[in-house]
Image (cartoon, rainbow, N blue to C red; front, side, top):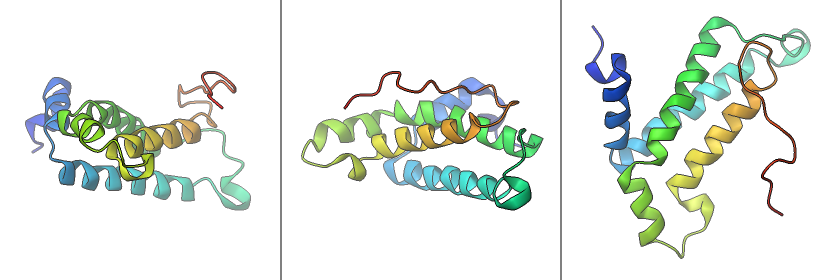
Length: 126
């Protein structure tokens, strides 16, 4: 049986926004580990020729992207930005979440069945 926050998108959204910083960091680590694991399926001589994500990876990575947005709007994650202006981006959870979303989107954009497209040069700040 699944928890309510796993089956209902609204409950999932509220659950992710309610995580403590430590819980959010742990969940982010799980999501990035999932990307690392998925990337292994598409490297090497045969894997690099694949043009479609398998269903399991597609579902896992899509769910990861779905989790990252509410995590970035978590009040504690947002408050960390305000409370610690002296910290660099690599030390703030908000930027780690944004970086993970970028990495997952970039990886998924390589595949025809992902529904993800990245446009080169759009919104890039020097």
